[in-house]
Length: 402
Image (cartoon, rainbow, N blue to C red; front, side):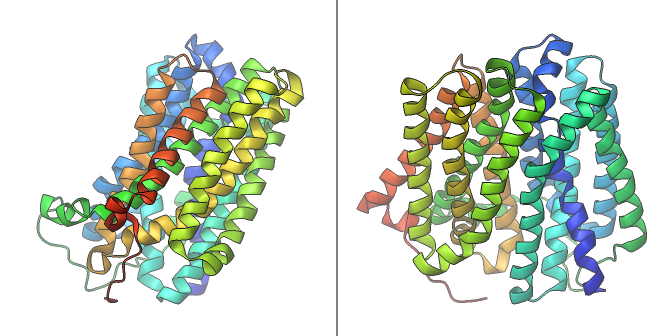
């Protein structure tokens, strides 16, 4: 069973990055068709990620109560229905509603995937499986915008959502016929689903909060970059959808290489020094992008590279930060790892989407908006790490294994 499980989990985990990346080249066209502003189209990304974060807290306990298979089937059915709703949307608010539902759906399948790894593999095997899954997630941003760009050029932007519907139908067959129930027999399935007492010890831990906010700051920077890129490169600089896909894919490739290099860096430096290095790269990216806007080219492909090269530095910082910050945040919670992971996902995704949504309400152009989100948060966290009064927030803490 376990040998056949990995391809199923890898195909399921693609649902969420696919829903983020495939329609990016179409965002300027969608703004024109719906007669809405760029920031309103960007809200479709923000709402998706907010729903994914909220779903961590709402859907996580359901996978323990009712089992992995029912939640996976529910998720993929909702994903297909919401993708179809997005493809058929005539009024913009229906597209926004569809994206919230899609976020909850993608969260359901994602929770099942990562729960199934915990259910079926030892900790050592699990680490290897997670790296395969993260590799699969990293490949999608490199490929999906090109596929989305080609679909949009041939059949219009709605075809990207039709593609997601078809993929969901395929996944429904795979899950229905091939995914076994992996929930352990000793899982607690009684008592109230949602209790403040479960979350209080996690949210009261300053060490958890510091590293959860570090994850959130990296996610907010990436979400700002992803949501502003089509507006700036296609809408402002006039790149074609395929040229955008090529540049975005190049950055995704850098991110993928950085993801595979990250474990080597963490092994050499340790968790906390790697977090400091990653945050420093985010500050460096901020300096680069501000410098490029002041002194660099501002038109055509040269202007596009002036925006995208600093974003490569951001992608490397993001890849380095996420692993050690997640590990440090969860280190104290061996006996309630699921609850802590759900809260971390909620803070990381929903927090990042709220911050990005707020910046999108300003009149800042893309480079300055990304620089604001990235710079303020990373500089603030680095300052805290430099002040001895906050040592207990961020110093590595050793806990007995559970």
